[in-house]
Each structure stands twice: as structure tokens, then as C-alpha cells.
Length: 489
Image 1: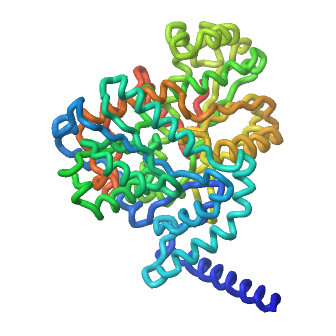
Image 2: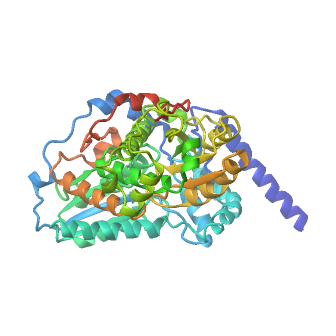
């Protein structure tokens, strides 16, 4: 009896796998869905991705007026909604989290005739991946800390907004695939009867697979209850991308500089390398107009430039870092050091910046160079010995920083020849980051509104508050590309 039951289970598994293989073979019917449990990249449908063509992004007009022009006054009740992806808080949550992930038709897009398979297929994948994923989450403490950090970010930003005179402000946060779910948080917002809402995806760079997916869900809920969420009922605006804000750029630079001081004079003379590791997306997204790659490249160029600008300036260096850090830098870096390493080979060689992409899964091509390939090449072929890794597309610690970078990539780098490894922390609750997000909300109140419907249906390359860092050499942006080009300073 037991043998027969095992045979039935085996046949059922083979049937499901066969169906999946058939769907994979049909590019028109199925988009890549292999998302490893410990890598929580979300995705939007191919149809949704095609709406993000550059010409649409560049020509899309802002709505007229701002929240301040319409209904918002300083004594009004302001709501701020952070959007993030979420993660299991305990090992027991892992399978449920995975089921929600794979049950999303924007993750696994099936033909209409096969939609009945959506939930059974999600259950099958989650059930198969949960044991391995649970081990990964167990290795970082038993669950994802993303909710903990997001909750604290919301609390601190709320305090900062109150200090700016917005006394009746409440900051909410909603997760895409685990508690608190978007639908749950919207009920709380409705009960609080706020007057205006600012929506901020906690992804500095926009992608259909992150901000786009969350905004699409938000749009669907809004459409279900127009009497509650219609723009005439609750004025709102969205800030879809904010990687160019000076406060964000300077805070990221500070996190890098805090690692630079951990390298001694001899190591600095050998040369220091900084690898920005961003979450990857399939190349097909970019071909369909997703602005993510462009925004990541520009973001890395901005942060790289700010790092070197602060290192080279006696005036800026004390402001950017603590007095103790500045003292250490003064001991290690020649005050006359410029962006040329050839002037004096006996002095600090400088810093070389790299960009790569992590967390690829499945058989399709993702953005290159891959972080694991880059680390191996740097250590074995280029003889890099001193390395700082910077997670550039993440605003809080989670499975991809604590397990993938800190464990898998660190081990690979050391095996490949790197002798001194440091990893810059995620933004988490860094004061400069918190203050900049609060400023972002204030700026959004006086900027032309951009609705959820506009961002979710047409896409949008953010034009709000895109203040460039003074003195940026635009050639830096061009020198960083998907082949792994770098800036040698």
C-alpha cells in the first residue's frame, strides 16, 4: 500500500514537472519563473514589462498640480506608505511565503487555459523548495529581518516628518508576499481616515519586478474600491525611484568610506577594489524597456564619484565621516592624492570600482557580469587582494546580503585569492538615509502628482527631485556597463 502511494506521488510529481517543462518550452505562453527560495526577486508579467519602453518612459507627462495645491495642508492627516517585498519572519513561515510568491500570476504567467494550475503549481514548487530554503533562513537566525528593519525605518521617518512640522503624519509599510500584506495595511489606512497619501517603494531604482509589481497590486486594490481610493476621494502621489537624491548618494558613500578605513597603508598601496553588487533581472526585462539597468549604472557612478570626491577633499571629508574615521583616513591617504594612480606609484594607488549582478536563477540570461563570476575573475586572474562589496539595490539586510553575500560570496572570494574582505552594510536605519526619505516625502508634497494608476499601467522614469551631485563627470556613467567595465581612480 505504501509502495503504491509512493508511486502515485511520484507520478503526480512527474506530471507537474512535465507540465512545467512544456510551459518553459513555450516562450509565448510562459515567462521565466525559477526563483530560488532564498532569493526573493519578484517579477511582473511580460505584458506588463513591455509597457516600460524608453519612449513611453521619457514622454509620459506628469499629472498637473501637487498634493499641496489640491488638498494637503500642514494640519491635515498625512499617510506615507512604504512598499517592500517581505520575507518569512520564522522558519515556519517559509513555505507559506513561497506559496504566495509562486501563486502570483506575475511570477508564473500561465495561458488562460491553464490558469487552473496556478495554485497547485505554486504549492508544488513551494513544497519542494521549502526544506532547502528553511536551511538558508536558519543560517541567518531563523527568518528574514526585512520586516523588522522596515518597521523601524517607518517609525524613524515618521518621527523625522513630525519634527519637520507634519504633526499628523503616520507611516505605514506593506509587504508584497508576507505580512503585513498590502490589503491588510490598506484597511488600516482606510480606518485612519487620512487626507493625503504618499507612496514610496523602498527600492531606490525602479524595476517591473520590484516597485512595478507592488504598484500593480496597489492599483488593483484601488480599482476594486474607487469610492475609497479614487483620486477624488484620497489624493495621492507616488515616488517610483529616488536613487539620484543627494542624501541617498552621500549616505551610500559614507557606508563605503566606513569600510575604506579598515584597510592599512600597505593594503591601500596594493590597490583597493569596490564591487557594487545589485540584484539582477532577466535581460528580457531590459529589452522590453525596464529602466532598472540604466538606473543601477547611474546610481553606481554617482556613489563612486561621491566616494572619491570626499576622499580627495579636506573640506568634505570631515563632514562626510566621523572625526575618528577622518583621522584614520588622514593617516592612510596622502592629502594630495588625485584621481590618477600613475602620478606616484609609492603613494596610494586609489580605488577601482566594479558593478555586477547577483541572485540569477533559471535557464534564461540575466544581467551580466554575474557577481560570482566577477569575484572569481578578480581573485584568480586580476590578483585582487583587497575588496569591499557593496549591496547597492537593497535598503535593509535580508537573505541576499546575510546569506548570499556574507556566506557564499565571501567564501568564493577568499578561495579565489582575496585576502582582505569587507562588506558595506545595507542602509537599514542609517541617519542620513532616514532624513533623506523624510525630505523625499516633503518634496513629494510640493511636486506634480504621479498616481498609482499612472506608474502601474504606463511606467515612469522618475523625474522628481533628480538632483545631480555637483561636479559629476558624466563619462563615469558611460564607463560602467554590463561587460564589467570599471572606473580606475
